[in-house]
Length: 504
Ligand code: ZN
Image 1 (cartoon, rainbow, N blue to C red):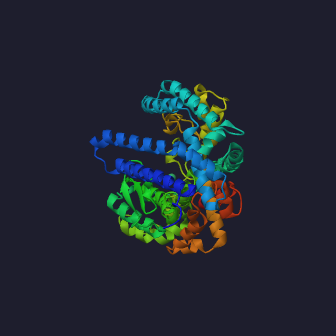
Image 2 (image 1 turned 120 degrees about the vertical axis):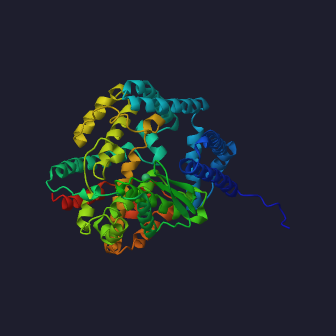
Image 3 (image 1 turned 90 degrees about the horizontal axis):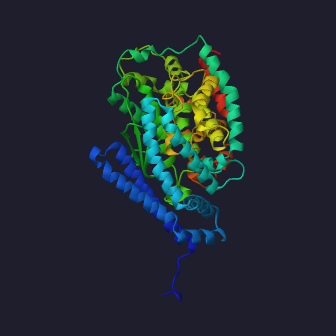
């Protein structure tokens, strides 16, 4: 019997609370997955009560004054790097959850459900004026939130930080400027090229759901997704969630006219899924065992989807399998034709349907609008015109109506201002990571051409996955690639690919 009663240290107490909080997150993840994939329609009412209950649980646990005291105490103690990372990240969540007055939190929740509904109606009726007062209110509440969170330089920094910790306007502006300078003329040159891809093989028969499922499961497995620690199901909007690194759920959808939506959707979600599965189990339930940001998450999905999935080497390996799954395809369908077809560039109005080259131009329009809105440089009433002129400037297309223009995305109706840039960061990070992996091991493309994807996955495991949230995203990128986040590798990657494909 020890001479004194053993007292739990502050850190153990803290980690116990953090792990319980994470269990609430696992429950929410699983309930959310079930809601989108399995739940019968009548289950909706009880489910929203269950979700609200879990959300209340999570809020009361993170805002518990005891948690505040523990953070204060731990911040003045000597901690290991890993412990310090856990404290830093929980401090971030604690501050976000406690800095807003309760009235503001309630007002935001009330406003969000109204705004979402009005946005759906306004989009269906092509009536921006109907949505305008709600969006004005959203911007007002968002600015109030940013003021409570605090920022040094630009009010938009406080919003970026919600989705990509540490990211600021002064870091993002040069990234976007580098992209704009290179991509706008590239897209224009591609459009003017007489050398357009031939996609006629897509029009000669159906790609059955069953075969698409079979093919994409095979691809996900060969990349290294562990189906003993995850599964693939069907939902209207594809996503990746789940309970934890040993239980990752992702979804896809099928279009029998067009097999690439499913295939690239699956490769995308597999990228998200392998990141989750690659987090260290010994840190499960703590920030050290959790993904660091939306941008880094998106880098993993975009890399497998685009750098790997749309490469010549990928099709070199998979073409025979593809043709035997879809045996209506012409037997002389070549790697070249497939590779060019999946890299078709076409400026379009809708972000979610856009290709790899034009996608970031869509994000740029939204970034500029958000930044100027919260800084008071433009007003909500100016948006339709501003949107249309930017679309014309960057993509050379003008929306015929607001439904296909400024009203197309759900984000603003949900108050998610500051989210869009993470999509572009994901693309830039993906190219930078892929270039660094190639510099370490130039044989990666040859291995992909032989169906050996493990070497690339292992590189991501050791440079990104195992680090969890130990470093802020920009620092993680610098550590992994030897340089700060930049648009250079992405620009080089697109230029080299399209120069070849389109004979520029
Ligand atoms: Zn994604």
